Amino acid sequence: MIRITTILALTLIVSIVTQSQSIKKFFPKQEEFPMTIPARNKVWTFLLAGQSNMAGRGLVEPQDTIPNTRILTINKENEIVLAKEPLHYYEPARTGLDCGLSFARTLLESVPKDVSILMVPIAIGGSSIQRWLADSTWNDVKLLSNARNKIARAKEAGMFKGILWHQGEANSNNVAETEGHAIRLSALADSLRTIIDIKDLPFLVGELGSFSKRPELFELTNRQLAKFTSEDKYAALIETSDLPHKGDNLHFDGPAQREIGKRFAEAYVLKFLKWAGRGR
Image (cartoon, helix red, strand yellow):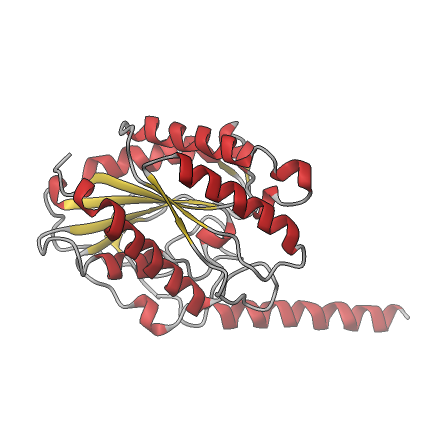
């Protein structure tokens, strides 16, 4: 019995390692630094915040690691580098494709030709909105403190033009927990806008997926997200009901993440592009 148990344990370990290696097969092997960093007023900066579906759990493919000299990000050493997926690095055993690079690539089609885009990743898997509001430590990251640190660095390099937010799965465990989510999200949006020091900063929110094993709870949370975005004139909601999961009924797959990035960009262009071009 002991021998069989040991064999099963070793088989499980091998399976986990093999799966991890497969997920990371196309991860970029090295970082690339921009030859020059554009003037600060020519760098449009966006915060990527929330939990795992913003941090990214999709499969990274070669197309996601091709750099564009006009798309930048901040690495774990707070250096400005050319953006390649995965953008997030806080949870190396779980990280995957997020929507950031797709968002930037799509947005480049509508911004002035001399503008570059800086994506600032701060999303942490499993983080509830209460933990964000309390500046709690989650997965070894102090949530709002880390946001302040990355925001401060990003403000040296560019001008903030928006926040992309995807979170809510951690607050969809029961009906009572979903209630008041819109109020808490409004408070968090105000906190992030205050840290950035732009009170009317656009705040774009992605819906939870429609593939949950507890769909009624995810739907209640999505109603709360819609309530927030309908009451905040500088917010917009991104629909995701038609997008697939990666097989776990929780996380969007790679193609879905690319589509979410595209939808974030399209919503931004439709509602906030004129706001962004005011040179603030």
